Length: 390
Image (cartoon, rainbow, N blue to C red; front, side, top):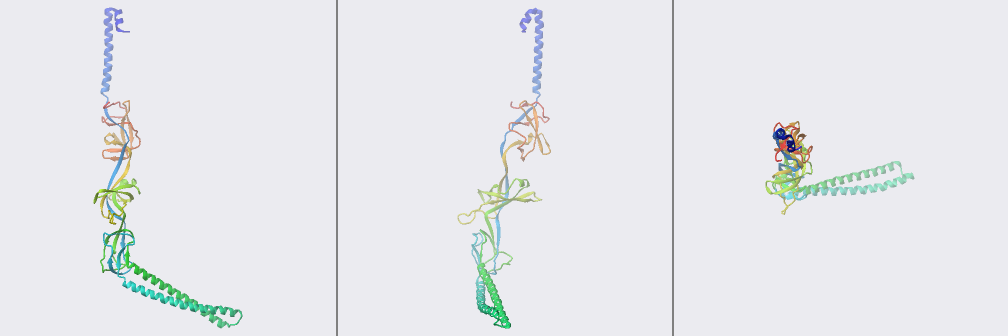
């Protein structure tokens, strides 16, 4: 029913009554609208961040020092006087290269004597062989005579004893040859060992003797120290928490203070195996290829200071601000979210890693959720809110 026809039927006085009723309805409607607007005005206003997975990588820089993969103390195998230094400190040598030469004169004399002993022993063995062959022939005749009873027992026993003695003499002569052979072989090896060679490829990092100095296998100091440096080891200490994140074979990059414009690629060779109980640091060693350069040397040498660059953790994660955390319950953090209906909900998540004023989460969240990053301190789940910017 419209107001106009209703007013016409009731007449002027009725129109006044009808208009009054319409005024009351309008007033009531205005009150309702005002109340709704007041309620909307009282809703908390919050700022949200839509969640999206982000690429993230943790970069760990470990101060480190270069070392050889092996250190070999070079000793003389025979006593003697140093006659020549063939490769000095700083030289890079191959396995088998000559490092030192000892005076060989005494060793040559010893080899000559051992060779003479060998000749005498062989001559004695030849004589014993002749006697044994003669006794063997007599022994064969004895056996035949015994079968025909053509020899007395006493003569047969005497000839049998002679054969056995000849056999023993030949065995002794052979033993003397064996001893002489060993002596000759040793004298020959000693002469060869007067030339001191490198056991492995490496850098002559230190020399401790001079020409004319006497040495021996029992000397307190080695002739030289040889460092195997291809590959080179680069070693440092990392925080304890990476113990479970680094593993053998993991790729790494290494930079050195002395070569600031170069980056070297290496692989993790060792992690731990223990944690230092005082510093709470864990040992990390990276293996870096160190091939020869034009002059045959190596670009990297032991003792260089550098930095190992590692990536213990990388991937796509939710990277969230710490100021969005409403409270913490044990190792879990409580976050608030706003749905499309404006109602606040609550979720508890476990951070994977903290990164300054941010933390990483991988489980328990989905892309598109609207995280409350700013709002009243007393805001709780179930509240109806307005989102700033909408």
